[in-house]
Image: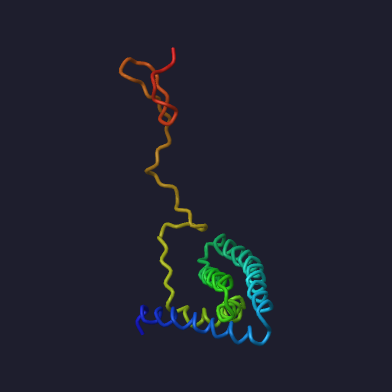
Length: 165
């Protein structure tokens, strides 16, 4: 299925599902509890995402420090971003999908399905931490700007007016 068609279907189907769920749940528990549930899921989801985000970032830093590519951690981080967007979007369906992405076993299952499609390309000369090695082309130097009269002028950024006498 082409990506454009899939996005069109999602753009139409997700709001319809959300509206239907709002009507059903609102009929069962009432307006104010329904609205409170939407706000509570957004707040709780944000707190969980923050906690898991710090954990994933810490694991990624540890992998980078050893020179390994943090591919799984990057995937987990992407899932957390998507989960966060879904959790702050008002609705029960998006909250359910976002909540599922917060569960590490669910992320593991999704990762297992897409792992072979992920290709990481890194330059040959990249060191751990993503810093390239020092280049021999860089020259560190100081300079003075002297105008045609032999007067010293300030370096760029400090004003190019005539020197004070």
